[in-house]
Length: 269
Image (cartoon, rainbow, N blue to C red):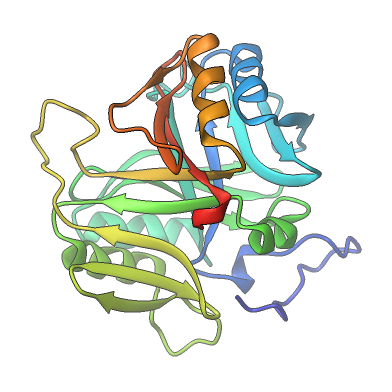
């Protein structure tokens, strides 16, 4: 990724603006009902520690070994949203990105909403996969998050190439501007790179009307861990569930409220 990204106009040297990394995945966040219950589960399963954030009262940032990993926002009831993990992408203008998504058949669930450091919106693409956009300052320590790559994204969708066109136009991928996301086609999947690093993959084959939500179009958040088996045991011991097909390399888990995520061996990343 672009290590020389322009810093936001602020005296803090550890803060970067979304304008410097437009189109790139910039964060992942859990929309939860009960903040404490969510923190207890993810602390037990992933070993995270939590700190308050300036974004809003109901928001906490999770850290692993001092590296910011993800956010947890207890706003599911307030915003009438499902409990779920959502990836966020950096944009120049939240309002313009929302307009581009709607023009191309996407829908808006929340926002754009203004927060002290920027503006956010939660959208769904035209196949129903939910994602977020963020305009403004990124979380302190974001460069460390990007280098450590503790979270990886996969879009499971009906048609990977059609989805790449939608997101490319909404998030301004593959443009002539420096530092933008590069879109590569690898067989039947789309690979997204930023400054040479793979940051996400898009797969075909999801079924829009499938009764099983894991088969419908969705963004899946993967967390890199040292011991997948230990995460599985901890999830089961703390009220979570494990999807069939778990292995020592990768397992799909659900927290007690139903939010789905994947733990993957760091050795396989």
